[in-house]
Image (cartoon, rainbow, N blue to C red; front, side):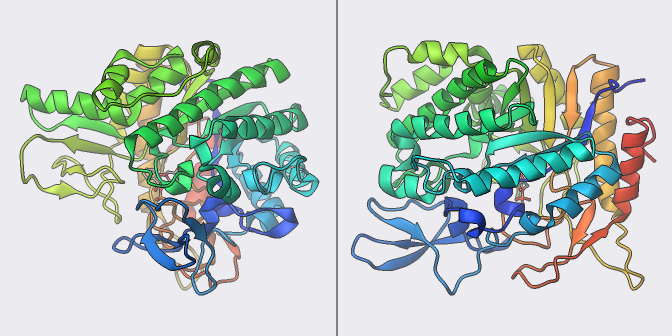
Length: 488
Ligand code: P53
């Protein structure tokens, strides 16, 4: 048998895209609640209020000027507010996951459900209770929760009052939040992920900082994030030595376009900047030399405190977790034909097909990623996101025949299997993204679907929210039942 007996098959979600109930049960506003819908051509936006009270609509990655803040404007549509309403459907949804045989369910806790303003004195009991019920429901179904502590949502108040992660005190707010949930769920949750796609956190929305493209500010905020990560890894182990804690990284695989050494060097530099730096810090506990040199060249001076280096050193992760959707090609040639990719545009890879959203599909790339990470760090791995965002059609008889999704997942599972069986890589689990349909993070659309379960809701939030099994539901159920042996 190739997959270990206790392999964690499951699925993944995030509160800001799935949970909804954005002001229910005492929840506060998160930055994620201020992002509008969008599509492939029109980026998601935020409305900001300037110091003089004037309002302005900008793209969500644009810099927010100093003293301005994001607001919720009545006329806009905000997909996170209802999302696909896990808040009111969790029993039904977790039962569906149980029916598929899930061993684990990756979900995130909304920071603002626990501390509505981020800097509150006491935690919101109603929020804590909600997750108690969710975890109890999971255990009833024999599902081990895998909990992301922070998935793209920062309490809006922390952004407004303190410039979010630029402020060293935000580390303490975050530690308090973690201390609260670690103690509360000590016996209900064992697997934790600190920050989702930490290497994608760079704008006002995620870091809470104005003028976010200012490198000094951005790097200082990231430094604080990484310190916070290390602190809570240590704290978690003190609260329960059985906790397994990881940090999550978006793993786009980069290839050099040609055997021109210049392409390989460009690939090395892009990989380092985009992801290697984060892997190095979380696994080794210090900033790598290439990063220190780069910061020097950029004239960035990080404000540190005595003892910080010990915090980083003592807070290395228990395992490596990452999302993997696609690869990208790095070229030093001018005017090469572009490929949309996710957010890092490379050139088109002639050997690969692309999804309807222009993401190159590269199952073998996943085997490469698993091998390279395992060789380099010798830590267990978890693939906590993977999948195909696609348009689904409901047939006249109500069926949804998503063979394209089955194909995508099947090919990727084959490569994981190869990495485990043939290469000997230690993989703990696999949680495909958006196991029950949810809102797309990139575009804010509903029609870009990943799930085994369809949710009746459109791009503007119209629909009954009714759940329906897709063809992939039965397929995945069999995959889990046979521990990955039967992929047909
Ligand atoms: P969507 C960009 C590139 C790669 C992964 O993405 C990304 C993003 C964010 O847009 O995010 C992760 O929904 C993320 C999830 C997200 C998922 O990938 O744009 O952790 O929140 O939904 C898929 O198709």
